[in-house]
Length: 273
Image (tube, rainbow, N blue to C red; front, side):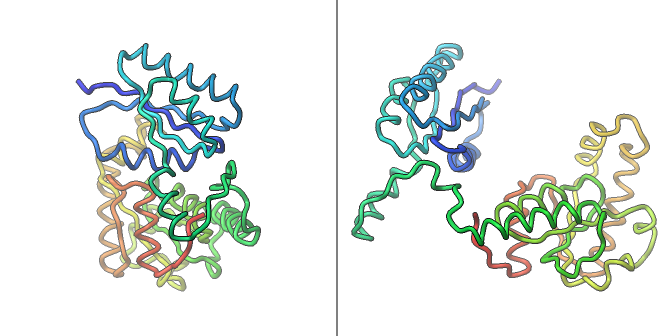
C-alpha cells in the first residue's frame, strides 16, 4: 500500500505556477499517494494563517509532515505558512538571488505577476486561439485554412483537451477532427482533410485504455466495446502510416507532453503564457 503524503500548492495568485512545478516534481517519486490541495489567493496575513491551520490539520490527520509548494512572493506570508510545520518548497527562491546578481537589480515582488495580463496583444492572441479551438472542436467547423495544426484521431483519443491547452498556453490555433466509421472504412485520407494534409497530426491510444474512457462516457454501448475500440484504432493507425502523418500515442502521455511534441513537429516557436 502506498504511503500517503498531503501536498499543498499555495499561492498569492491563481496557484497555477505552484501546481505546475509541484506536479512535475512529484512525478519523479513513486511509492506514494500524494493527496494534493491548491490554496489560491493567499494575499494577506489572515488568509496565510487560515492556510497554515488547514495545512497543520492535514498533517495531524495523516500523521505525517505535509509538503507545501509555495509561490507567495511576500516573505511575511511565507513565514506564517511555515508555522504549519510543513516542508516548505519556495518555487522562486533558488532562482531569485542568482538573477538579482546577474541583472544587478533586486526583484520587484508583485502578487500574481506570473499569470497576470502583462502583454495585452499576447492575451488577445490566446483568447482568439481559444475561440478558434472551440469553434473547430470535434469537426464542428471544417475550414482549417487559418489553423496552425489539426489534430486527427478516433473519438476520446485526447484531441479536445490538447487543442485547449495549445490555445491557452501557447496561443496556437488548433482544430480537431474525429475520424468517423465512414472515414475509417476508406483507404484514403478523408476528402475534407486533404487540403490541409501538412497541418495534420495524428493521435492514437491503446484500445484497452480507450475502452475504459468510453465506458465512462457511454456504459455498455457498442461505442465502448473493446472490439469497436480495437477496430477503430487499428484503422486509424493504418491510415496515419499510409499517409505518413506524424503520430503520437496518448495512452501514457500527458497533455503537456503531447503539446510539446506537436509544437516541435511543426516548428511552432511559441512562448508559453
